[in-house]
Amino acid sequence: MFAVLGFVTTLALITGLIHFYLWKRLVKDTTTAGRWRRAGSIAAVVLAVLVPATLVGTNAGMYWLAWPGYVWLALMFYLMVLLAALEIPMLVARLVLRRRAAAAVPEPVLVGPAAPGPAVPGPAGDKQAPAAAPSGDEPAEPPAAGAFGPDHDPSRRLLLARGAAIFAGLTAAGLVGSGVRTAMGPPRLDRVQIPLAKLPRSMDGLRIATVSDIHIGPLRGRKHTEQIVAAINRLDADLVAVVGDLVDGTVAELGEAAAPLRGLRSRYGSYFVTGNHEYYSGVEEWVAEVDRLGLRVLQNQRLEIAARGGVLDLAGVNDVSAAGTGVSAPADYAAALGDRDPSRPVVLLAHQPVAAVEAAKYGVDLQLSGHTHGGQIVPFNLLVALQQPVVSGLGEVDGTKVYVTNGAGFWGPPVRVGAEPQITLVELRSQ
Image (tube, rainbow, N blue to C red; front, top):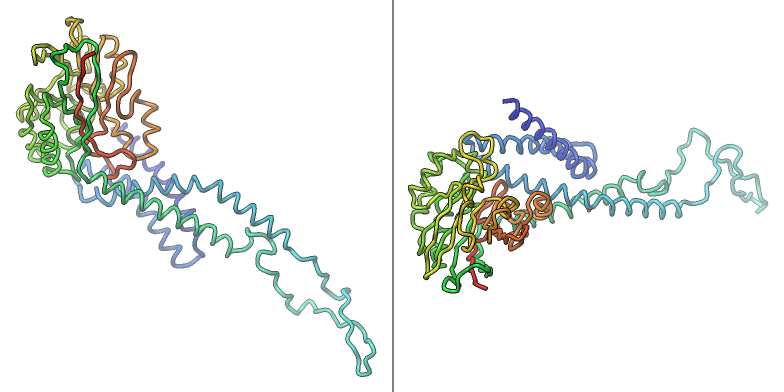
């Protein structure tokens, strides 16, 4: 209870600070006092409340919040990043304009009773006394715009602020719009060849269709699952590996949407390992449901794949997030990888790439993972790299090859920028 309260409080604080910054740059700096500023301020408050309401509400079954809330979350992020990136150019522009304005200020003119006025010719053309200077009761001519620098010139301040706001708004909208189209589109089919030193020559070319992070949930349902199953079946793979984060909801909510998985086809079977989202969605029920749909769930287990006259060990471990949940055994690498024939190649299915740190100690030849979504939204890929040793594609951890697929779905915002949804056909090659 206290952990949930702390999370919600922290989320509200962060969201509030971000929206205050956006209000300052997009509303206060771009408008004068009046109805437009009031309308913008109200909108900022509503949007600030929408973000935590969406994250909490969708978990409580209020799925109608998902589209507006998650799309605004993506827009909010890009607006913040773009406006923050413009802070230095904006500062330089203000300094340049201030310097130019200061250089253009005219010489001061003394006004008042002691100031000499121009001579006024008399009737005979003789010069008369200087014209009287304006009295203190007469208004002086206002200074030219910009005479005291851009910080005292509302038109220049508004011009700079509105230009930055328009640029950030249009760019963010373009990125998010394109990202929605990418995320909601069909997954890209990629093929990668990975050599394994221990793979028998007879097994050269063994193909594993690898998919992760399908994330069946409030925004992607049965049609999404059907699309993925059809794409995998077209690959005519020897094995199918579903490496976690299948769902975002319970079996009661999403069982019908997951049902098309029953149609997966492969020569030597389809296999599944849990991801962290299964532990948010009723992992025990989903393990039973996935097994009922015909996928073999590897929970800290290993089995032999006899194919083409050779043998390959296929192992799977529970997600690292299982530790401490009390509903499932934590990842147990010794149970899955110990006491095996070291002359045989072993392929490990593990949801998170970081599992390779432990897997490498058991001489794993190849680990297939997901979890990262390839970053999903640039520049989040840079943050993911701080936690995971491989973000996307093929890498290596302590001698173990790790292939990370981008995932076929998304989590949170229905947006993918710089990381297309993906299904990968991994082709094993002998050396």
